[in-house]
Every structure is written in structure tokens, then in C-alpha cells.
Image (cartoon, rainbow, N blue to C red):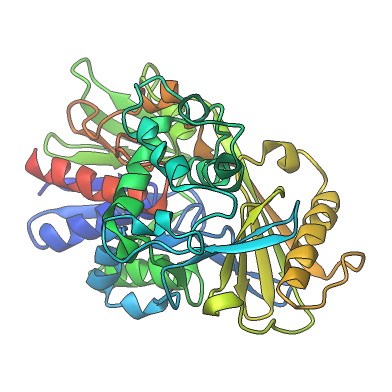
Amino acid sequence: MAIYHVVGLGLAGLAAALDLADRVRGTAEVRLWEGAGHAGGRCRTFFEPALDCEIDNGNHLILGANPAVFAHLDRLGVRDRLTGLDETAFPFLDLGSNTAWTLRPDRGRIPLWIFDPARRVPDTSAGDYLAAWRLLVAGRGATVAQCLDTTSVLFRRLWEPLAVGVLNASAEEGSARLLARVLMETFGRGGAACRPYIATRGLSDALVDPAVSHLAAQGLAPAFGARLKEIVRDASGRVTALRFAGETINLGPDDRLILATPHEVTRDLLPGLDAPSGSRAIVNAHYRLAKAPRTPPHGLALLGLVGSHAQWLFIRGDVAAVTVSAGDALAALPADEVARLLWREVAQALSLMGEPADAATLPRCRIVKEKRATFLQTPENAARRPGTQAGGNLFLAGDWTATGLPATIEGALRSGASAARAALSR
């Protein structure tokens, strides 16, 4: 009986494992390996004693244009664990000028909203938005900044924070093609595709724990703490053995391996693999407020921030959290310094929302630094993303592989499904 090995149980590995478990039941064996003590990778929820509550390691925004996410939830019967925000609208605060506005896309695909001053960014014209066509026709080597007018109000208030938030890279280094793909799958498909969703009780509750439980119900118990040290391959490229700390697993002639580890780990395991190099950090700050704020504007639990270090402010109950993408500079600072710097921005944003907040009094907080949150999403690295098939019986999965999307939850789930299909077809 053939054995399918899945190494790495982030969302990509979980997606691959779920597909394999459902499709080879009784005809093959599936074995799951994870180096950490938990599944989910960088997408997880944990209890934070300093806040006396559970928090996500990072804030992830899910959109209606994420079919793989909703297919994952539907497979597990937990779609209700995502909360869709009241309307397709994105409130923004410019902390530099204390200006507030709400971006409101149309429900249909025709972007009539750009002709309505009340629905677009203040001090911009419809023509400013139409200039985004340059992203859609960008060459493979183009960056976001090379395609847009970096001196415009729209660049500062929308394109730049969007590029940083989506690509986890500055507009000067981020791939224009990757940002264009996101724009086409969201704004290009109308308001329903742009509708924001948030995991109601955390990322693990919605995306990770149900997957682990589903696998356990089929008799698949992951081996946690199993850090892969070496992949042994023969002259043809076929994987013949997996060497973990203290254990070697030999692969038979019909066995297959789906490697769903982070890009830098994969490069170490597969010397000579042409793959992206470098990474960018994401810093998240979680603050336990004295009381839960009143409902944010328009019933939304998130706010886009401009003129600040952070790009997004999430509010869940009495916890306010901000996300700083491309946050390498902040990640290098002491946590207490980061906490005070970002609290000033959170306090200003809360005050602009009509919620009193003392910028000088730091509430209980937790800083989470993901120093290698994503691969560096430059045009050069985007061109080096490998496909699923890595030769012989080896298949790759991960948000850093050639999904066509930036490194996102949606991309990770799509890559896992692709790897499972490829392994099964072979």
C-alpha cells in the first residue's frame, strides 16, 4: 500500500492532508509530520497570560474573493465561524491629517463608485483610479511604485498602504503583477468579492482545529515535534528517505512526499532548488482595553490606517490589535518600545472614533513579531516561485510556491490542494 507523507502542517499542509485523507481512504496510507508542537504554522490562536485572553498570532483579513478559504470551511462544516462585516465598505483614518473616509465599492463589477466623491478617497478624482490599469499591464520585472504616480494623494492613501498590506513589502520593491492579481480577484469582481470577513473566535477555531479534528476522525494523528533534518534522494530525484531527529523513514517505490514547509526551510532541505530568497517581517500589537469600544463606524470591526506604522486596526471585544506589514525595522526594536509607539497610533485612532483613549497610559499588551512572515515578494522572487512538481515523488506546497497570488491564507490553501492533486494523479 502506498504511503503519502505530508511534512509541514501549516494551512498548505493541512489542505493537502485533508484532500489526501478524503480521497485515498482504504487504498493508501497518509502520514503527517510537523516540526512544531501545533498545526497551523503562522496562522494560530493562543492564550496570552499578559492579556488573560486568547489572541491570534497575526491579524488576517479574509475576503469574499477567497474561494479556497470558503471551500475549506464548508468541507469542515464551520463556515459560521467567520463573521462577514455588515457591508462591503472599508473605513480609513489618516492619522497624519485626522481625516476619516469610507471606501465603498459597487456590488457589481462596473466600478461606478469611483465617480462618486462620497464613496472614494477624499481629494481624488475618477481618473486617479483609472490609472491603475498600469498595474494590470505591468511587465514581469515591474514594481508597484514604477507603475503608479507616487506623488499622488491616492497613492499615499490607498495604493501604498494596500501594496504594503497585501505584499508585505514596500511599493518600491513589491511586485506589480502580484498586486494586480489581487485587484482583479477583488475589486475587479465587485462588492461581494471585496466583502471582509473575520474569524469570530480566532484563526485556530475557524481554520486549524476543525481540520485537525477532521483528520483525527479518520485515524490520522500528526507527529508533532518531528523536525525534518534531511531529504534523501536518488540519482533520478526520487525521495528515498526522510531523516528526522532520531528517526529515519524509508520511502517505498510507490510512496510520495508533499513538502509543505516555509520557503527558507525548503531551500535548506532541497539544495539547488530555484526558489525565492529573503523574507519580510510582520509585527502585531494586541492591547487589552479597559472596556470594549462602541460599535465602530458602519458596524465594522476593522479600520485601515494611513500616515502610521500600522496598516490595519482590528477590534474584537475589548482587544484592539494593529498589524504592521513590512515591519523589519520595528521587529528589530525592543518589544516595550514597539508597544508604546504603536499604542500612540491606536489611541489616536480610537479618539477619532469617539472613544476616549490616553496615549500616555499603556494598557496591557502583547507584541508578536513574525520575523520571517512571508517571502520577499519582489518581481525577481515572484518569478522564482517553483511549481508543485519538484521531481519524482516529491511535491511542494506553501504560500510561497507558484500560486499566482501573494503569500496569503488563500494562496496557501490553493497550493495544498494543487499538491494533493498532483501527488494523486502521479
